[in-house]
Length: 271
Image (cartoon, rainbow, N blue to C red; front, side):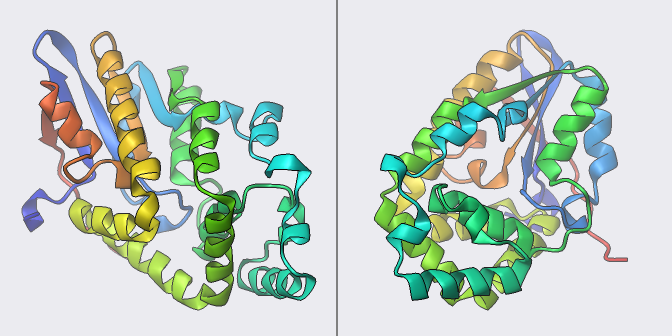
């Protein structure tokens, strides 16, 4: 992608629908690099009448979410891992980001991996970018929806074998410094607006699970968003990794007849 075309924000238009919609690739982080164009996003949210995220964030942390996010058959992480290995992992993660994995003993390991990743980055803002935008839309009384249901998103995690999830968690514990460096690099790429590099990095990170975690979900989210923009002016914010590539949401929307125009992405200036 040429430098002048770098962006993670697009205007979407359908020929038979007068109001423009917008699509933003987000990163689940609280660091300033994720927020440096926040005024632009907020202005576009105010112009639209629907805000769409990957899932309905009002459902996060609710009883249904918790029940579906648990390990199967009443298992716990501390019972799956040998005691010494569990305590070592616990100490490493607590030292690295202040999270005690005991609190998440019954949850799917990938959820714990995602939580640790978020907390390895600077906590400059009180909310991650996607949650901040959701709250902003609520403040202006916009209709808020999720492209996927909580059930769909948790079902995706259950498709990844527990063995592989445990491996990812143990890898995180063993290489926590490298994981932190990789996350900082990801944030740097995000701030530059380089979608293709971001997509390639994310695709490499999810490895053999890319069909489950990216491609299959892209198909559903693109179809859902297309239905929404036919009748509404929508600001949609989903993880940037879902946008790029031949199987990305942008390509799927374009193939479906949506006009996609990049919106200028400014260069991040670190104060």
